[in-house]
Each structure stands twice: as structure tokens, then as C-alpha cells.
Length: 175
Image (cartoon, rainbow, N blue to C red; front, side, top):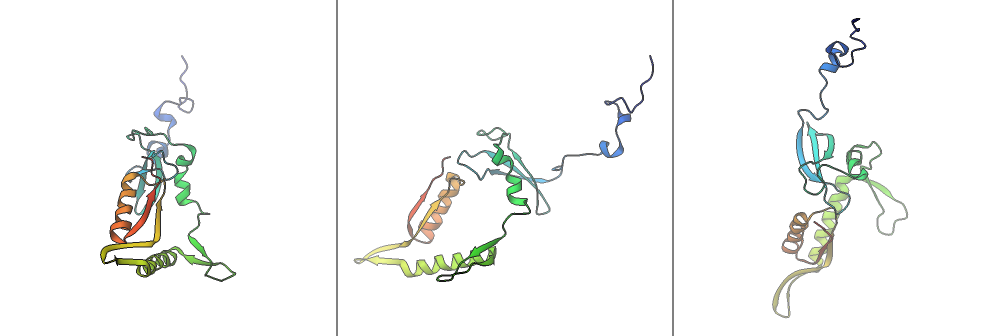
């Protein structure tokens, strides 16, 4: 029988280059965090691989009793949601009575939201009504989204009701 060249032996070590022999998955050695897909209320599990404060990949979590490692097309594209070059990193803002929009960095916009929530709370917070202790704020409401699970919405509810005194707190969590 004629001897085959290693070039044609696709299963032999002779067909592999040194680079091929040393290949490893892109998430090898990366830290992993468990998470929940941010898209819908199903609650599919995701594994978030990161290294050096950089996102490496997002995959379905085989340990999730809900999705057993599977993700829908939107969930499978979560990595792009966070890393796409076209991702918006600035906020468009139109001041009251202004005709033009301006761009703000995210930190400035978040500080503005926090300041306005606190100022609204100070204006609308009632400590007593008719001589009775009340400790509530009816000038702000909060609606938690379906991308948060019950535990996260519970913590948010505790912050908004116990911490800020809000009475209009609801959520649409499904799991």
C-alpha cells in the first residue's frame, strides 16, 4: 500500500501546523459570571466571559433550568449589544423649552437623573398627614422592566419604597 503524504492525512499530527496545535477557545482562562438575558421575560441563563475588564464572549448557560444552554437569536447576539462599534455611548438631551438637542456623556446624564429624582423627592415628600406619620413621596413612580427578575425588582422596590418613600412602585417581572 502506498504511503500517503501527511498533507492528505487530515487526521494526523503531520497535517497540523504549530499554530493549530496551540489553538485554544477564545474564552480560555477568562473569568465567568452568570447572568440572565436582557431581552424578554423568559429568563434564559447566560455565561458572561471577561478578562482584564474586557468582555470576551456571551454564551448560553447549560446549567440554566430555563434555557439549558440555548439562546434565541437576540440572546445569542447579546455580545454585539455591548461591543458593537455603533453602540450609543452618549445621551441626547433637550433642555426644557429648548428647540435643539444636545449630546451629553452618560455619567453627566445619570447625575442629572439622580439630582432630579432627589429634588422631586424633597419637594413631594410628606412626613405627616392629619397628625399621623406618613413618610411617603407620591410625586415619583417606578416601573421595573421584564428584563429584571423578581429578586432584582424586590431590591429595587425596597430602595424606592423604604429608601425614597415612593408608593407607586410596580414591575412586570415574569420569573
